[in-house]
Amino acid sequence: MKVLKIDHLGIAVNSIENGKNFWTDVLGLAFEGSETVEEQKVTTAFFPVGESEVELLESTAPDGPIAKYLEKKGEGIQHVAFRVEDLEAALAELKEKGIRLIDEKPRIGAGGAKIAFLHPKSTNGVLVELCQRD
Ligand code: ZN
Image (cartoon, rainbow, N blue to C red; front, side):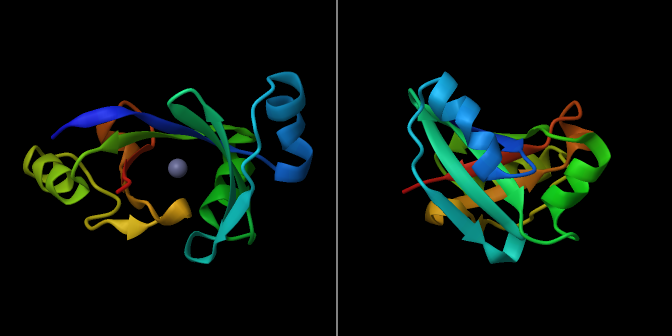
């Protein structure tokens, strides 16, 4: 498999509206608007940084994955996303190598990207997202 770059860092926040000021006003990053992904019960906001992005994640429901993360750990880095050339091929290769996958097949994330998560038990405790953007 070919990993092209760190695509984005996913950061769980209680509120994008209240949390975005550090990223825009202090760091001077551009706010590219937000998008809700209903299936994942999350609203995401992207802030480009060079070739990568910061992704703020706000839960839309108390039983969503981000709400659960915030409850357990509070605000902070929730996942790291790597861009790959071919997500289906990458998942097949990882499965073959015995890596635990949360998503066996790609699903559609924010911005129409194909995404899949790997289980932190196989990745030194880091929730890893792989994504492919065409
Ligand atoms: Zn992400």
